Image (cartoon, rainbow, N blue to C red):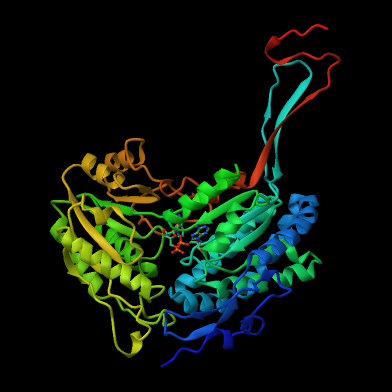
Length: 510
Ligand code: NAD
């Protein structure tokens, strides 16, 4: 049965079934690009990509909006974000359906993604009254010293296909309350989800008489992303995607001494110790490796299992893997949908082939599914591979449901294996042994930005700072004090004495 194109199915459809340059804050005068669903190969529609002329127009209109927006008190900006959150509440179901169809993740996960947009709006509203600076005691009498935070100006957001809307919202909503105007370059693979967000927000802008240039979208591939990154008008580039992309963006932004915030690839591991509660561990592993078809930056890619429990864990995992239902993500009975496109399927096949050449043994999986339900060619079977930890393929992030099973003898060795990859995003240990857990969380433990005990690697809450170390890029987004990346710090000293004392007691008598 062919799935009904969500653009013809729900209330958001009409404005963007066919998209060209519009009044709604996105631009595109370049070539048309057809967007095809990985779910059933159906065509969602066509979008026109942005040219460099379009980008310049967007930047101009964003600059005008920026002046108006910066002048608003932060709590007033927060009120607009509150309304944006409510608009997303109203469109949660439709938008979730569109994300599922365009990207291929399950409906549950897509609705969860829209919920993250709503949650970050709520977080940002509270934050709009808490953009605190510190005060310090001046070493000079009758002087007041403090720091304050000002908006940066224009923020460019480059996002990946696997979270078509949530990662943008993490950046955009925090950035908006901080007083910035954002220009979003979504993945070229998921432009319709981005366009839907643009429409949802447009309702709020119109209701509040706000300029169109406050929320901006440019659609296109890496070329327009690179043009955005190198443009000196953009005060901060927040880029989410592969490490290859991050290295290019980092160099381009650094060359103009701009600011960048990077959220790049992961190669996340779970350590399973003999003291693990396997009732918790097995579902966490399976969700981490198979959820979103292994296409999360936090997906579990390596399992480091103590040798004594290795046979038990493997047996339980194989049983669980055989129960996974693969099919349309729009059917909530299925656990796993398709990969994003046939190129991703090729990468899945190639990684398994390389693993086999590197002494890897496939325990289950290694199959591209065929037949009526799978005719888009993007469905694969999740795969377990037993392999030595030093195999080169294990060091790489393959964006597919492939889980490498590794063994260890001592906790020290397990942590060493966990940390030896180039990426440093998410990590976890399953143990009920307090010493093991605390060692893992100590400076001698995980070197990742996220370290969990008795929770898998995938799925983070918006309240914490999200991001990773090493080749994951070092950036932090979302909760905690991540907002500081979207503002400029100013240290101010005010002299209300009748003298001009110099710092460090320096005398300069005239
Ligand atoms: P990708 O790197 O191919 O593309 C990501 C975005 O960058 C897209 O919008 C793309 O058009 C743009 N882009 C690519 N090259 C560019 C360049 N040279 N200059 C400017 N823009 C450029 O990644 P993808 O396949 O869409 O997503 C998967 C990757 O994203 C994985 O590596 C995954 O781990 C990572 N990711 C990381 C996080 C995180 O928070 N750490 C979150 C989601 C995804």
